[in-house]
Image (tube, rainbow, N blue to C red; front, side):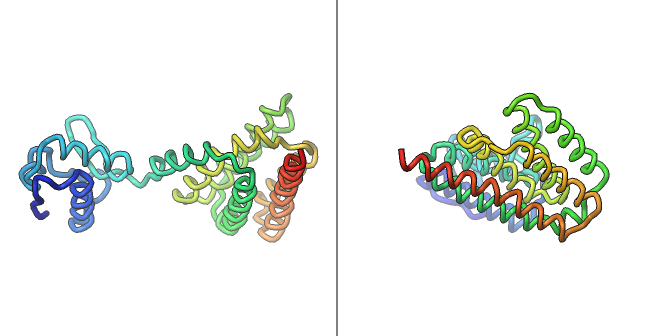
Length: 233
């Protein structure tokens, strides 16, 4: 790493640290130089180094562990998604909800071939469990919780960390969406979830894509109608 001038801002130190990680080919768990070493390398104060380390922590690139110092983080988009989730929670334009539903549909339907290929007994058991709980739920909130867990389990069945974390982001925002636009057709939703489970169990991709398209499109149309009704008020 090249030394930088004392007046350089902490963000530039962070950028140099990123370069160092990639140039050295560091892997998750590998240690970075100590604060004292970084102060000598960059010719900066301890406070500037700490500010840069903090920025990289917030971005999820590194983490600071007791007695080990700063190390490269494992793959985790949570810090980025947490920030994005907060920003989305401030949205008041109802049209964004339709875009969210389109994004969810694209994500889930796009995952179906992977789900059919990789789903295991553990995830099939989970789907069956959430399905049974949906059928036995006694409130809208309870049904909504198991509905979300059912769909999250579908994405978990891909065993793809990026897709799983993308789905977590979508469903965090969905909590707000469900509060504003709760499902109106409970029995129809239950039967669709059952059909989704059966298609997963039989690994019938064609049937799974068909029922999932119907299932997600129906809720999209419900929300679209509700938004139209709100605009007339």
